[in-house]
Every structure is written in C-alpha cells, then in structure tokens.
Length: 487
Image 1 (cartoon, one colour):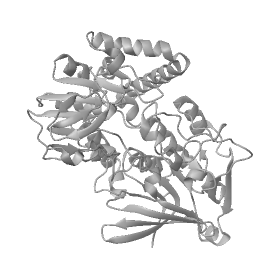
Image 2: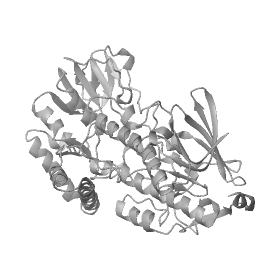
Image 3: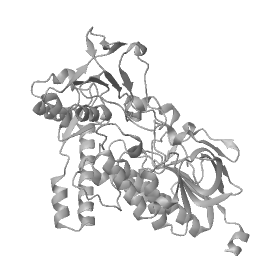
Image 4: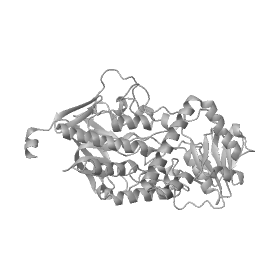
C-alpha cells in the first residue's frame, strides 16, 4: 500500500496551490494529489459555457507566488485554465497528480497516526495512506447542478441545457434563447450569447446587484510596465484586497448608501430601464455576492436591443417557450437553466476517526479550515466576499506550519479541540439560495476566535500567518522511539 506524508484531494486552484506550498515550505514531505476528473483545473476545466470568466480580479484570484501578467484583470475561463496549467507544469506539480481518482472514504487511526484513503481509480479501488489529509475539492457537486423541476418541461419543443454541462453541439444562432437566473452565470451567458441569437432574455424571479467594472486594470498595467512584475503584482493585489475589504465594510455599515450608489451606476448604464423592477434586489448589498460585468457588457447588450431582462415567475413550460405567472409567454428555442450550484462538503467523502463515523455537520470549524475533533485534516474554502485564492494561499501556508510544528516537536497528531464553550452559528452568513439549501450539511462556526469564520483577509492573515498554532490545537501522539532510532 502506497504511503505519502500528505495527500491532497483535488487539482483545482487550491490543490495546485497546496502542491507549491508543500514543496516550498515542507520540502522533506512527500505528497500526492488525487483528482477525480481527467484534467486539472477544477471549475475552470469543468465549465465550458459561453463567456465563462472570473467574477474576481486576477490580481487576487491569482496566486500570491505567481504574478498574473495578462492585460485583462477580469479573465475568461480558458486563460485562467492556462494560468493553472502553466503554474502546475513550471513547478512540477502536475507530476504529482493522479487523475480519475475519486476519493470515497478516509479513516483515521490514532494508533498508526495516519489516514487510510480509498478512492475509485481508473482500474478499480485504490487505497493509500497518509499522515495528513488536505481536502482541496471545492464546495459544489461537480456531477450535478441545481436543477429545479419545471412543470411542462417535457412539453417544451426546444432544448433545455444546464450551464454546468454545456453541450458542445448546441447551436443557438438566430434562435430565441431564455436564460433562467440572475446570478453570475446568467449575467455572463446573456452578453456572450447575444451576438449570435435572434433575441435573448434573462428571466429572473428577483434581481441581483450588478456592477460594471473595466475588464482591464489601467493602474495595474501601468505599474507592470514601470516596475518588476512581482512588485507590481504585489502592489495591485494589496490595493484590490484593501478596496474590497473597505467596500464590504461600507456595505455592512451603511447598506442604504451603498445600495443607492450601486443602483445609480445601473441608471447611468440604462437610463430608460425600470430599475426598481429589474435591478433592485430585495436584500442589502453583500448579503449575497455581487455580479460583476466587465466593461458593462450586459448593459451594452440590453441597450442594443439584443437582450432584455424580465422579472416574473414561471407558471410552466409550454411547447413554444415559457408561460409566466403574469400571463405572458416568452418564446424560446433554447432554455438555459442557470439556476445555480449544488453545494457539497468535501466531495461527500465518508470520514471516520478511530472506527467511529464522523458527521462533519456536527463539528465546529476551526479557523475556517479544520474541524473540531478531527485530527490531521484541513480543507480549503475560499471567501464569499473576495477571491477564493486569497484564503487558499493562507490555508496552504498554515497547513505547512502545522506540519513543521509536528516535526519539530516529534508529535504526529494535531487536533482542533475547543477549550470551553464556543457558541454555534451557521458556517456562512449568506442569504443566497444555493448556500441556504446546503447549510444543514456544513459544520457550524463559533462565536469567538479561533472558531469564528472570518470573511476578512486581514484578520485571517494575522491568525493564519502570524497567530499561534497552539491556540486550542492539541498536539499529541509522539513519534515512537523505534521510529526515531531508525531515523
């Protein structure tokens, strides 16, 4: 049975980052990456729908150790995937990846101080052992998107597709298209598809905050032309981090003022639109994630008459399209159900500790990355109000600190253990439907450090990079004497 010091699950942004940090900060540790799919890249390889792009700037979605050097700050999916592929190849991380290995179970033994991990490989079950398990598998179900049942769907004469599984043979040229949804996927699809369609409609039950932003960051490009790439990247990264934190704080402290400004920006783009009906959400800014449209492309498509937004509810699908509760029928040849993701905690792996099954929903999250009572396991989970990679970088480095601490102290086990009452709050303070549907499956967070999940890069930087590793972390399980002597 093969053994590695650290087993990483997932070869997307987090997993590739984990490989870099392990090689750099823990060069004496062996590691492997198990990837359930046949390619690296995670989200950026899976999603192939028109216009797929980041909704975060690449100066923060990119790694701290790997400057983003392209002109566009809001990058499309293929460019992001290329960035990940180059990073993995340049650092030799791609040689550590085992593809088509879907992890099913992970069992911890305190006696052996190791995990036994079973995956479904290309030729059948594969079992490996490791001293530390690092879950970098993302937060949603790659095999299934959220697809509500629509009455009359079987009667529709056209084609129904979900963006998570975009068919390569879909031809929508000269056709009427309806995109159901108002989130990041919908606002990406509509302007990307509009030039080829006869007409495209974004059908939403309720509006989302939509913000236009230049696709290129002029200041970042100027800095890169004047300064060494690493310095320019670092300055731009910190500028964007600080601005994001400031904007989020303002949204929480003065929601009405921020709301007024955001809607004012939409009015500037669409002076003749019914802003109250189609662009004014029922919630405050940052109660859900904002939708970013580079160069205002969605607004441009609406102004040009190629696209429209309809706010209504669906009564049923009919052969010629969608019948709305208002009585109107939207004609459609193609219906795209941009109805969201299905969240999934750690790929639904079945965990056990010393023979006892672990229900992670009954645990409390530690520093946004580990689980109370579960030894030698961490997971990478990004921010809801900022780029995923900001938290992934910090988490990877913290895992390495833990590993190095255990080595230095001759101990084999690190277990987050509450010291007194911590309280209980939902893992995420977010009102989005896709989040609320899944919160009962996720761990809780506490009401105090280190059990509080901060959606704040500065606080996490202090806690994970500079904070004590001993804060309610129990190090135990000494290296046996015979192992020390052999070494």
